[in-house]
Length: 304
Image 1 (cartoon, rainbow, N blue to C red):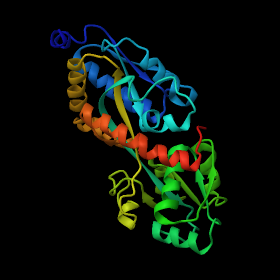
Image 2 (image 1 turned 45 degrees about the vertical axis):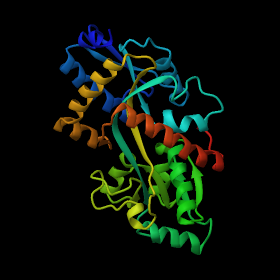
Image 3 (image 1 turned 90 degrees about the vertical axis):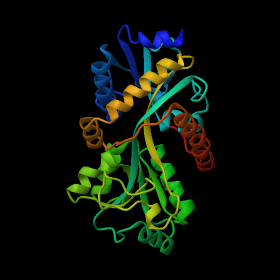
């Protein structure tokens, strides 16, 4: 029955829920993938934006949709591994309400500084913080950035002082003016200002250096072994979606991700192209939900 269903799939348009506003990086990346899926499978894969409440509205809508393969959705490391600890209650369960399909991209974060700041690397930043505890302010535009900050404090023993902001738009002007010397943010947000010389990169949060920022060493490569926080996007279906449909969509997305234009498009948006099996994605969610949850709870980080 399931295999027969998959052989005729899709027989009508497929809705893809994005829990973010139109034009945001995840939305643009997902639109490209959906367009290519539509071309490959002969049916329209159309985006439905459901932003709001820190992405919980869109994920709730996906969780409550029919498990027939005609509603899919994009989730993130935030929606699936961080939100359970950031919110007192969620209208969805990241592990019980969804069928993982595949990763679509990874998004390393980065530590950067104003050009006048004396440190030019993560070890120099840590040394400067130890020399003058709690005197170096670090702009933190969102919860994932706060987790990177806490990891620096824990693994590096760096007594830095975190300054929360509501988004990159409010944080970046103060860092580029030198009012706040250091920032943790996405490569997408920081790269244009590093390219222009208004900021300088100190390190990326992927385990190894990334093609997204050539020449910039990872924090792990600079002496903090195992240091890693890489955000990600992934495709999901409602729980109970037939396994043959999940397998078919997984295979087709992997073909899309292998296309040179997809790689170029996603990299321009700050994403490393990265697929996975459904089980690999499920395992990642389980491990990271516990890992980030411990840090979020210990530091009392709350949703913005």
